[in-house]
Length: 394
Image 1 (cartoon, rainbow, N blue to C red):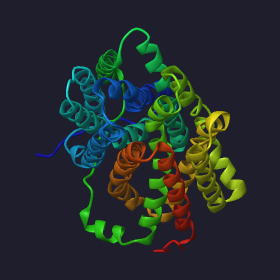
Image 2: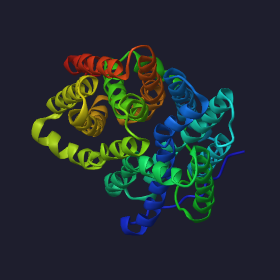
Image 3: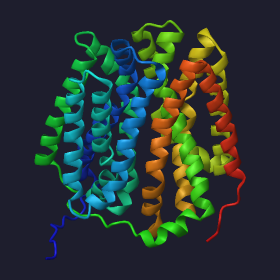
Image 4: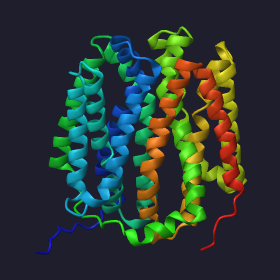
């Protein structure tokens, strides 16, 4: 029996603006609850007496769930509207945080974070589809700019939220209250939001083999993979590094972590303008090189210079992302782009937000976090080679 879908025309930007802000708020809650795990890892490690490797392996489990659901969205969207998927995503993100607040064993933490990742990963593809359904084509770039403020604000505010919450509760209470807030927001979203009434089309596997054998796919995979690693991996381990190995208090570490992200929204917004002056390849080269330098300083410096390197390090990935996706739009025709993202992004997310933070934690146990930052600096230098591979023209 054919499915009927209620059609809703796009709104003028001014009319759509409140609904865009509400969708950005949903994305912010999704992002901030992922970012909260970084400053909370210190408290979790202290209570359970985990090693750095075991503590950061929790990020691997969360990223595994996130990557699986990011890919599964393509199939779920053929049966459910994007609006329903978004509502379910943010509701179960909140439910999983509430459950995590009751955990008493490592296995329970793993299962709770797997559930959290599976819930959170459903959002992004459906969020993009809902955003596109709200506004007219000529307003998409403005809508996207509003939406993309959410993850940057999530990185900035997460350490402050933790410090405020820890002043009157513990890490369990922080997760419980944030989880309840997310569930209430999901209910409000279901009742008042507009857009997202469409279904998605399933991925066409007939083109997967051809995409995987294209040189451009692997250039994009390398660039976006190292950019995501640079953005997330240091962020997740810095509180452990600063508190345990640099003798900072939790409040000092969280303040420095938040300060390091304050300028990233401006850097991301300015990247498009800078690239028109410098060109794409020089800007990518400079961003990767400066990322490597800042990581090398994090591996060797102390005191004020170390703090300066920590503040500088996230600025360069913020420039890289918009430019990499400009390259992406040139590399692949529109009809292939969604499938390329469905193939690459789950693996990129798993490596950048899971495997690499865990690797840095392993280095913290066996050698030192500084060793891990040095190795990541060397990998960043190596990734520059992707800029000198000639893109395929087909």
